Image 1 (spheres, protein in one colour):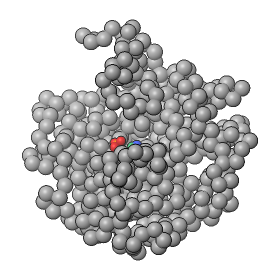
Image 2: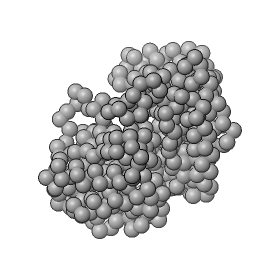
Image 3: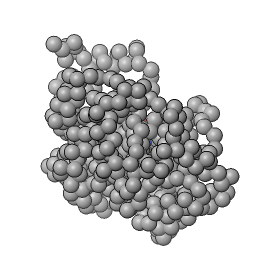
Image 4: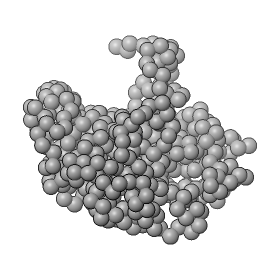
Length: 439
Ligand code: PMP
């Protein structure tokens, strides 16, 4: 039996949120009554095409039946057993499966509950293994909101009034070709990794434990680095005695048309962090390292009461099977098609400054073509337009993310099962919204 009268629930939920939840949202999005595949339904029965997946989480589709079944199956056995005290099969099986599907010699996993915890744990492990303390991460990068990962997050807007964050963290320039701070708008020579060497030499005491990067930057605005960049970053990290941590919280689990974004660059990181798509919406986070690195942790060095929850691990095993069984391939094929379609928007609309991404992680950067942007590079980001385009899309029944460092990037991150017709509908809706909002 439903607890709410559907007709009044939309309004009621907003009132309850105002009254009883901490006011951290910027603006409330579509309230969810149920969701299936790529469709989200609100309490009034309105259906939305979801091309944002609850911030890139429901990779195998909302309420994927086999994943729901796997979770129910585990719910019927036991719900909790603290995987660090009482060994259980779902955590053991998932860890073994991750050793198979993560790149190279990555083998041993720690389970937590979220992306930020995965990053925190990876920092601790890198410090323990290297014996060093400093961490360097990308400007404009995002790694979470707890005080360690927040220090790595290269965007002041998440940090205001929240400090002090952890010490010994610095940043280097993002490989953001469209607004390149290294080459200042000139042709991309693709050697911005060299910037890392300069930053280490000028901003650190060369006591580096980790270089932490998103192999494709998500919250920063779907930024894909140039060929060779990640390999160079790894080499520089190792030259300085540091580990390369690939934060694949957003890019992992097929999002970029490959199981991991690092696969595109043929780079094996020392630690890979995961969350979001891992269990298709059930809370789970993880980081995986080679046995040599992982074995630096000693008993008692790290723990999480809920980490490796059996229901979430059971769901994750099914997610991986489905991804490998054709969904990643779908993401790759749809992604190639999407890249071409979005590139057309650049020529058709003056306000579309850049389109970019990999697989089903793509962005459309909206600009004011009449004004020049930060440091005189590329036209001014138009966050106001992006916000109104996002609102317009909602009215039209499409949920699309709005983000990027400057708040001006429309985000295509649909469930990876999406079909061409649904993607086409989202693009047409985006075109209509851009046309009407700029009229
Ligand atoms: N790392 C990356 C790359 C992310 O995109 C996010 C979330 N957007 C996080 C870490 C933090 O994940 P969570 O919100 O689960 O803590």
